[in-house]
Length: 624
Image (cartoon, rainbow, N blue to C red; front, side):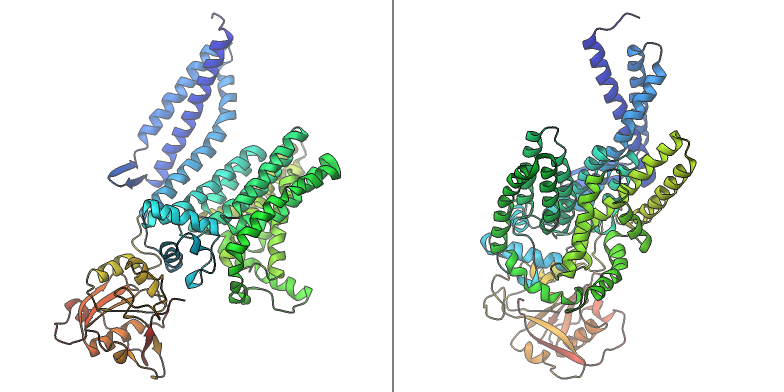
């Protein structure tokens, strides 16, 4: 065979790499379609779907054959050996990339599934809709809080794309996708393939991480920045030259200063990450270099102080609201430690998504001191410890979603354990140290078993169905139906935590407090509650002067049976002329208070439920 010139050989080698990578991605896609059955996404009038694994399998076969042919052109008699080496070098990374692409497609599919908003989402959405950019600073309505930059970004998208669920959930979904893209970068840069695979899968399938990717809340941003900033701190310390390390560190300070406007997680991991950056600068360049680097922290501090003045200081009242989620006031050191230890199992289950309990914590913590990547271990271990420290100091509650920013560090502990176990097992086999190989393999297997439990629990969140309700409540359908019957002068009735659904899906502004506002859109809105003792039964007087009432029961904030009690009393006062039960929890009705209209047949045929004692109390709606 004639010798190829260097330019042609380089081009053929590049073509071979592309074909091999394409074959790996197409093959992974075919396997994904076989396992899941495929997907379908609709963007307006456009529909994208993939169900048939035959096509990607054919493409993978053709690309693989092409790679072998090109290898033959480059060969010197060792075609298969070269092909094997090339596949071994490129296929693992292609598999990780294919997993990330598949996860992103599923997230986008769930985003466009447009499930109705849940209560907390409606509350923050009302702030976004009814407050100006300037008014998003200060204390938010309905006891909500979020970073000011995140609020600004969300409102800008709302004004641009509208108030649909897709528009509102776009930013959280993008932050979620960014999380496992960051995990992919960390895995490829620092970890073995098996550890990188574990980290990516944990960030994709972690129960709470996947939940908040499609919620109108800022928690997916907390996770993204809590994973990214410590990794960027390690990246900054690895510059080949002092000038390179200095430039990277400045980049880190700038990114950290910008990130704190978008996520509380960026604030909470910054101190540990900053200490690491300054400490590594001191190690490489001495005290003067460290002092110069610390001076850049002034940029971060100014950004934080400005954010505190605009927004953060107005959330101080929430610390009293969540006082029960802090260690007891005045508790000693040992009592505080035991209080924190008692929270470990709950944090593992609700946030990390693991039912392994103490085993999960042992493996996650063991990954830090045993790590083959001491820089990564040091900074993420610091993040984990700071979570306990902030809870002990009554700064950040160790409770459910408020602890979500700690989860990436715990997942990193698991990944670092798998990374070290992988390396040690291979070293043991090469050195014929069977005890080391067996022990390392056992530790790695234990970590993968814990990962499998997390993945199994989180996999249930990924589905191809388009949900029509959220936790059994469909505010969107019920309130839209109810408001289609609205006429001027109608009274609006709901429970205190049912009102946000009426305000949001009914298009009712809460820019003015209902207690003091007057006008067509706010007058005649009432919140009703259960009075078990029979005192304060004011429903007839509350509706005096109204010819009709529109009632909605959604979020279950009252005792079971209150909805039937309310409908029964309304039917006694007037006549239910239109009734719809969208879900067992979402029920709406139109009540004619003159008693001159016929009763709706759907209401008369509804399933009778045991009566609830007491009566219905109420008052004009108040914006809290």
